[in-house]
Image (cartoon, rainbow over all chains, first blue to last red; front, side):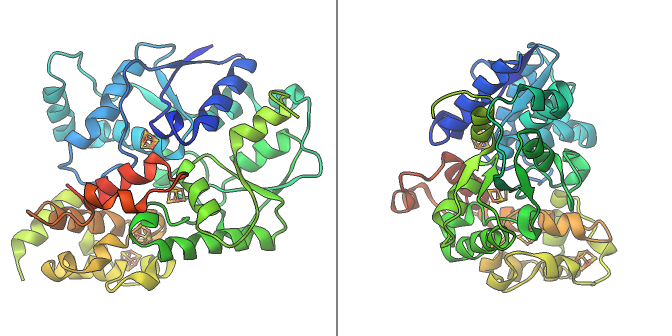
Length: 262
Length: 127
Ligand code: SF4
Ligand code: SF4
Ligand code: SF4
Ligand code: SF4
């Protein structure tokens, strides 16, 4: 199958490995990520204020372009892109004024009213491929590895809009890890914030958050951690004293599927 | 106190501040509670009272992580993070009030910092 892909700015830059391993693993599993033409950065944060229009236009244009590819859904890999695109798409359902103003801005372009949909790559793995099938495709199982999945905020909240997983007791990444043969580590801080963008304005606060998350993972015996978010990876790597390595979920997927080195 | 501010914040955020029962759960769950002068439940009741200007002037508006833990866990569906976001926007939209400017960026760069952090901070702290 073919699906519209929104990589996001960070995956074109610091998080190239996330982009590369996502595309390659998807291709191996029979899903072709077709990059949306001329997409622009979504801005990294969805602004909840109802009168914010201009900052959401890049997301709307991406959603409208995605409508022309495959079955009209847009897949993202970065948690932040997922959150921003999905909340923007949802706004068409709840805010008629937004719908009207956005379409005025779009000018000559075809109208868009939220008919697209946004999915995360993890959801494709669960719902299109299926974790049972994924398990069969694993050639280098991660047997004996204790891996702590880090959800953070942006994949889960607000759950009323994202509906990604149970916001207080998610399991999609643990099920994913089990399919790869690893032993998932369930620890209390996996859905608490890493400090996010405060690393730029109040690094000390970000350090406290990241340390709390990693200490929790360490206490429960993790060998390493996985995330879907480049900013989580940065905070959990740079703003912490805890040495546990952090990797992208797509990198461990690539390893398990036998892609790349070793 | 200025009622116009209150009306604007309520309209922008869409948050039901009048439903707050002052249980404090939002503040109890807030990961950045310790760095805030005014805490999430205070944002909610001060906006309800129309006491918005003190919040706009407080560094607390820049300490919220938009992690949405308070929104998820409020038993009354009040959505405190949306209230804080509206107060912050009200502050940074005023002329000369950008908290974080493009000129501030070079000092913060390191080789691993994702672009995501920069664009998000600019979106949160500048108009
Ligand atoms: S969320 Fe991040 S990486 Fe994704 S496009 Fe938006 S800003 Fe760029
Ligand atoms: S955990 Fe950190 S980077 Fe990740 S989603 Fe939350 S704030 Fe963003
Ligand atoms: S959790 Fe909700 S009801 Fe309780 S104080 Fe906070 S806003 Fe008010
Ligand atoms: S969204 Fe802001 S106020 Fe609410 S819990 Fe997170 S940091 Fe605290």
